[in-house]
Amino acid sequence: MKLWGGRFSKSTAKLVDQFNASIYFDKKLYKYDILGSIAHAKMLGKCNIISQEESFQIIDSLKEILEEIESGIIEFKIEYEDIHMNIEKVLTDKIGSLGKKLHTARSRNDQVAVDIRLYLKEEIADICGLIKNLLVTLLNLSTENIDTIMPGYTHLQRAQPITLGYHLMAYFQMFKRDYLRLMDCLDRMDFLPLGAGALAGTNYDTDREFIANQLGFTGICHNSLDAVSDRDFIIEFLSASSIIMMHLSRFCEELIIWSSSEFSFVEMDDSFSTGSSIMPQKKNPDVAELIRGKTGRVYGNLFNILTIMKSLPLAYNKDMQEDKPLLFDTVDNLKPCLIIFSDMISTMKVNKSNMKSAIKSGFMNATDVADYLVKKGLPFRSAHEVVGKMVLYCIQNNINIEDLSIEDFKSFSPSFQDDIKEKVEIESCIESKVSQGSTSTQNVSIMIEKGKKFIETL
Ligand code: ARG
View 1 (tube, rainbow, N blue to C red):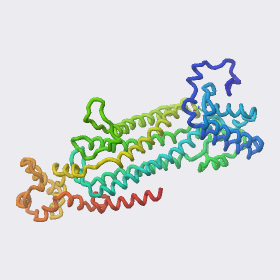
View 2: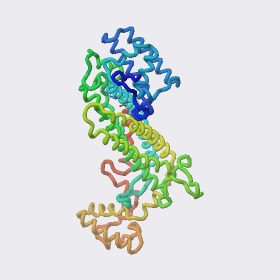
View 3: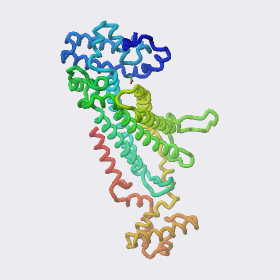
């Protein structure tokens, strides 16, 4: 008979058993379910809801079950529906009717909620560790490439010269925010739902603070109806994960473009590339493409849970069982993406000379020439117009701004003086970016130093 079978006169259809069961996926929560139950049993003993002796016996048996699951002895069964009832069944098989006392003052609704929170708290800590590794990789790469000159783009059109170190430090800021976002999400979800009962609280004088303490939560969820209905913490986590994947995906997109023959800015290591089954010459950036692709999958999971939750009346509805596959899928995809991405960029080869030659065309020093004129007293708009005309002249004559002679410069504006020739050199364009947070070596060094300090706080 089912653990809840008392009021039924017929057993459930086989198909319904299969359809209703979540053991296929929620078995992943066995450890958290047992930890939650141990804390609950301790509290029941402490509050004299069961005897101390009974509490000890239940706890010992639960610890035994944990070991048995880990050694693969226990076989979960669809007929017991989910991880909670499977474990309870094993417990009752072991210690008889005493096992049936464990479910006093709780329901599966608060039980599943605490299991997911415990699982996610651990996973977030793990993911933050992976982001930290990625941040360190970015700091190292930026330091190595602090003077690697490359074109900066807007509209994917060459815009202004920057350095690769600067470009990488832009991603450092994004992943730093991602780290903080996850920490924030962790803080908000760090409250215990267990003890909420099905929805209304329970008829027992329990000590939920005690359980919170045992399980390492900051406090308890203050409203029991909210405690069992809330899945915000999953949505927040999926939303933070989507943002991380979006950042990884943008970066991957750039690496894919940069590895094309048209760009040849970088080359992925052979160990992070794949070949073609038909074209012998091919070396494909599959890893970066897969991360980009998996981003869609994580976004899908976010929309999945948002849609599941949007019309659910309070409190628990079985729809909520569907939260787990998409949560697990997100964690199981996000973690390898973070690891492999960090390894991929730390092994890629940077073609510094190709990056630098790409600066030659595209008039990337045009803004610097306009700024030169502003320093000589022209209003910016007039300077913009003068340089626009110079660019047109260069296009018509198929030359670059730096190819113009001093006389040429002066013919466009009398404000040009001999020093313009050195000011249009690319290195000088980069080093003259003196505003805080700019691409000059000095400013990027400051960013790297701040980045290192941030890492030390983690
Ligand atoms: N397997 C269920 C889930 O994952 C556990 C909660 C069941 N609660 C209930 N009232 N049927 O959501």
